[in-house]
Length: 36
Image (cartoon, rainbow, N blue to C red):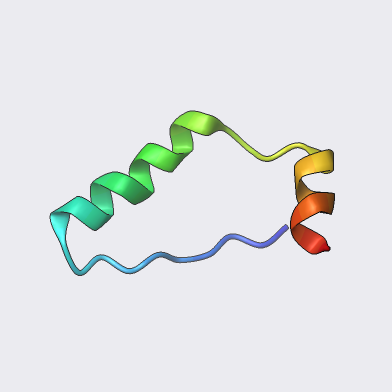
């Protein structure tokens, strides 16, 4: 598993990055689509 380390240049960016956790991990199907 790969976990990117996002940048923290602005408060807005931190809030956006933290908000992504609300969506949970991607499914295997979603990961296959990304890998294409």
